[in-house]
Length: 238
Image 1: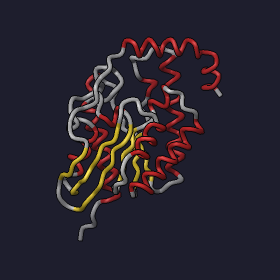
Image 2: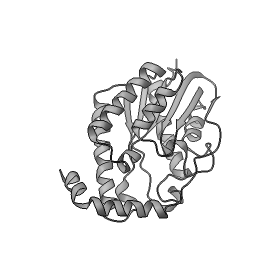
Image 3: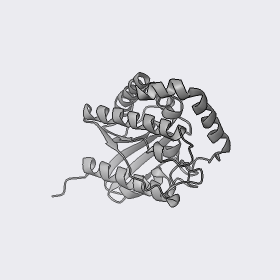
Image 4: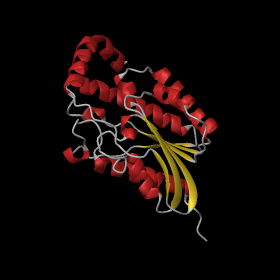
């Protein structure tokens, strides 16, 4: 109720603040480098990384520094990893879903998903958010054979110092709501798991735009995702 009242009462002011932030914030490119490949030795593991600008590596120069590179390097120590990245700046869950529908069928054991921040800024409704998430999850299972889906929680947007108040409070509150919905979703689907990287909000963990992860944050994210995957797919040792 508080969120909806704020939407009604503060809407013109929030829109003005959002436009100002967009105007003054530098637009960073997606990380350069390969978006698919195969590395490592051991048991075969297919990894599909999908989502938004964070998944695409905005904030660092190369994919080696980004989530894909950090994650695959850590998994490649124990697995033969075939991987693919399908991520685009600005994508909402609706956009991710459309991209998956347009992509050719492939087979992966695990998917790592980063989505939600653009649904906050784009004001995706709760019913739409959940419905499209469920459709995305179904498609990952049915079209791509994914057995384990790792959903990444939204960052604590209420701590983004580049956002003025009350916009920072507003988007932070909504991000918390979407995270609660993610927690409820994974509680009813054993093939889904939620990870919530705990990034220190210090300058060297943030990109120059003050929004996206820098290399140390991507490293923490990749480490957490890799540990989560290893718990599910670690080969049994005799």
